[in-house]
Length: 394
Image 1 (cartoon, rainbow, N blue to C red):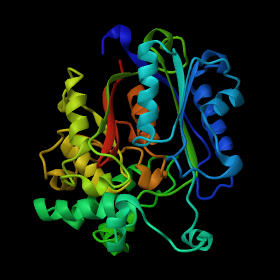
Image 2 (cartoon, one colour):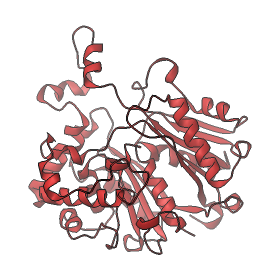
Image 3 (cartoon, rainbow, N blue to C red):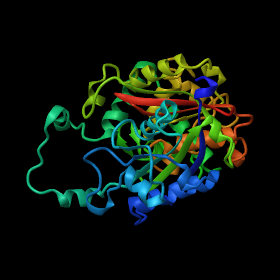
Image 4 (tube, one colour):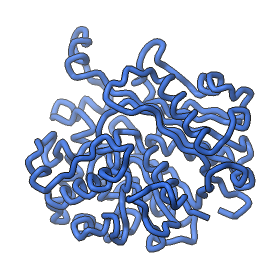
């Protein structure tokens, strides 16, 4: 991006985060948004856009817990505004971020609050008890569910992980090396919920959820909201925190949901490869310039896919790359330095944007700070749709 078009991130914030907090989405969003405004010293009347990612269409909680972008603007005293989007699709938080970035670049708004709010699903017992009558499956899912492909654990994780092992010789221990490294980073992060050290025996002894995927390969469901404020480069200099700039950003879709994960031609060479190709086309920077990477870890295999797609290692080489210690703090490419969603909780990618910003500010990550970090990349999702953003410290 040219200097005059650059978009900057200036404020970040989290809500209370935990298991079944009892807080409504409205309360979670308010907490995160106020925290982000306080972080950079901005007032509500200085914000003229809101993008809220509140879940997948059709999966929102019923009744009074629903919330949209206009609710947020009204609740926080931001009216009138010139841009708003109640995003309920796309590859998690990154869809909201890129919507805000595009709005600022096009001049539709100058300062946009973005929020991802997520609640835990009902327990399996509650879901079972709520079913009335026969369970019917329509659409593309009728061809997969009868054979056991019921949840994202199978479609997004188990099948790609098994395929990666068969094609490239990836081992369970290499998956474990990633999980252990992330937990080591989480131990240095006060925001992390899971901080106890892990050993390889701990990993290998954890139960399978859908082989070869273990419980420790899965992100941790929580109630949470995460907020990031974006603005123009010109305005960014007026606020309390050092601005962090968007250098390149991309959304990618190579298929459509709901059955896009099963229909991808190659389970490991999919949308992240397309996203990465476009990301690097839009910048003069190269993979070797990146100081840290914050890569979506709904499941371990997704991190391996992004490492390969972004060119940090060769195709099929993520296992040995991780096993070598390269992705640990002090390695050639520290990855998920906040501990990832497996440890800070499922914040649907917003945590990776926030961690990138904190790392590039240079003085906010304590013992997990990557020395002299100037370039960070963060990415969301996999399979049929994904996105990535490259950010710089100046």
